[in-house]
Amino acid sequence: MKDFRVYNFNPGPATLPLEVLKDAQSELLNFDGTGMSIMEISHRSAPYERVHNQTKADILSLMGLGDDYEVLFIQGGASLQFAMIPMNFATVERKGAYVLSGTFSSNAYKEAATLGVGTIAASSKEGGFRHVPTQDELSIDPNAAYLHVCYNNTIYGTEFHYIPEVDVPLIADMSSDMLSRPIDFKKFDFMYAGVQKNLGPAGVVIVVAKKKMIESSRADLPTMLKYETFLKKNSLYNTPPSWSIYMVGKVVRWIIDQGGLSAMAERNARKAKILYDAIDQSDGFYVGHAEPSSRSFMNVTFRLPTENLEKKFAAEAAENNLIGVKGHRSVGGMRASIYNAMPIEGAEALADFMNRFRQNN
Ligand SMILES: *Cc1c(COP(=O)(O)O)cnc(C)c1O
Image 1 (spheres, rainbow, N blue to C red):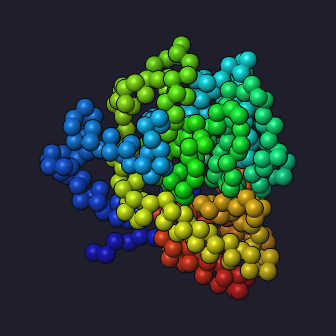
Image 2 (cartoon, rainbow, N blue to C red):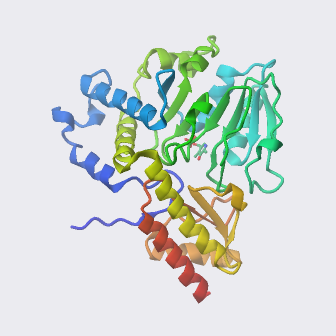
Image 3 (cartoon, rainbow, N blue to C red):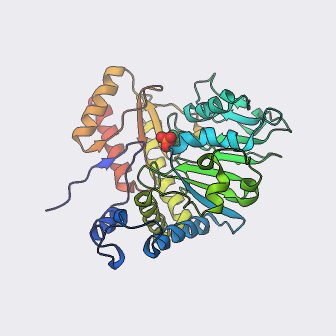
């Protein structure tokens, strides 16, 4: 039987590479000669530890980082990182500074504010989060514990296209664009990503941070809320989400096999151009949400002339096996998420559909 697959534009959990899914399927019943699946073996066993350590090494190598950085695997989603970061690094005297560029960065700030240790360095809320604050718009207390940015704004469809120049540690939520293109990761002290957008199934967050930064964190915290625990115990203090880590390992291998981050960047830029061209060449029928200079390569957001047409668009797209194009309720309109695993043919199929739909309506 031929596999039935659609083009899946869901924002997260999101599409995964077909090769990865098939590979996982092929070893589901007997992983590495154990006669068990990876889900059924001990996290202290050699076959699991190989997966765990290889995945960490592959992530660092793709990012061009050395052993002054460490990869941690943590549960609780990116949302728990919003709380752990200020708990570990900020104080009332040295607050964490936040750039508000969308929903998730605002949620991150909210957690710091709840603890009384957050300040705002810039915000693009007034314009409806249509752009990412520029370097000139940042106002950072030189005494801040860190600057926190959300590198790709999954809901509004905007992305940083520069790395903030700062004199304090730089922290980035890269949940929806980590490993989508080469950037100078060395400029960041601490990066994290809930993997269910671009890198795997839900269940684990990847933290990539300078060891020095982690060592500077606060010690008087519960064990599972301290980054030190994960650093000292190789993220194996308690049972890790082994299935998720195993799948991330396969996705990371797939990225390497495709030619690494520059190949990903090329492919992602092509897909984004196909869709933004369909918007820009629609005589105003489709209107992009993001200002062109802040447009995301990962989440393409746009509106149609009326909400009724938007409903019709989503329904007819689904009939054409183009799934998950409805936008987030806070922005409305449409959103096509085109992470690493989305093939170029998927973006072409959606652009063709957009052109047909415009002509028919
Ligand atoms: C989805 C998302 C989050 C929230 O992730 P959870 O793992 O659901 O907590 C945070 N930040 C960004 C940029 C996201 O896209």
